[in-house]
Length: 153
Image 1 (spheres, rainbow, N blue to C red):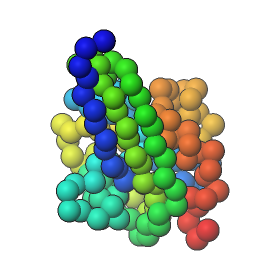
Image 2 (image 1 turned 180 degrees about the vertical axis):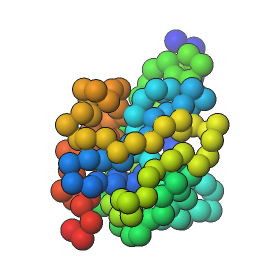
Image 3 (image 1 turned 120 degrees about the vertical axis):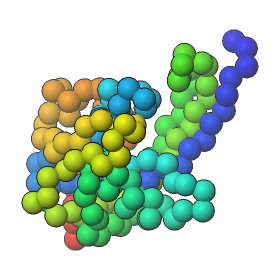
Image 4 (image 1 turned 90 degrees about the vertical axis):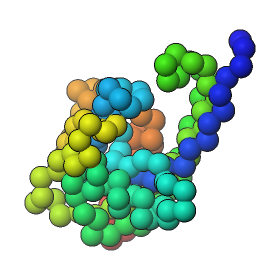
């Protein structure tokens, strides 16, 4: 098996639910895994608060301002398998999931062009895993608990 890298990454993600739809982003060819759908969000920079990170990432990936953001849940994934550039890796991702409210009248758009996000869209929840596929496990996790992410709950 040889040597492999060990990585642990802390990320903050926005779960934005509007009725029967959820805001999702697609990972660009420069990201990993390219083409997969995920929640708006990403890595918490060294010294950055997770709350500030989710607000920043939401704007960079969706062009939306958070009207409110409330930490609701923590999800994690641990994978030991071939990863980026087909290198074997031991990856542990810890995902802080925030219930975020936005102005739904504002059309989402990717602000950080040429980054790890190439598309943002409001997606009918019923399409996730069908017309919208593949999706990362944290999306399925959030959808299974979507009532916890509704504003005001």
